[in-house]
Length: 134
Image (tube, rainbow, N blue to C red; front, top):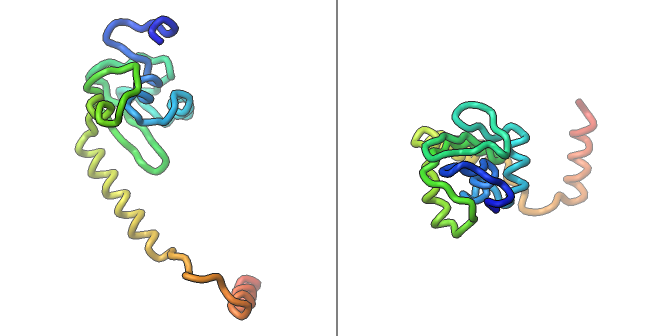
């Protein structure tokens, strides 16, 4: 891999690091996230080939989660999750904001529980009558 993508010593491509740190399942998904503007390095924009170094900060968005990470180690190879967790540290502010957002989603979705069964014929007619009138 290092023959194809030469990088200076102590630096790794952003898309490779995100893949190795298990932020995204594949390198192409990491590249798409970067191209889509969902990843920032040190408060600025990012391209897939941008080199990241130890001590850099990465902000990324995955679905509804926003994370701010500090790079602790570099890797070009994807390993087990236990090793991947040693590559970064999530900031405390990011962790609390993510937990608060998760709790908010849980609370706001509580009223959207599906009914236990499908509506019967009478209930379907009732729903149609309700939907027809504005």
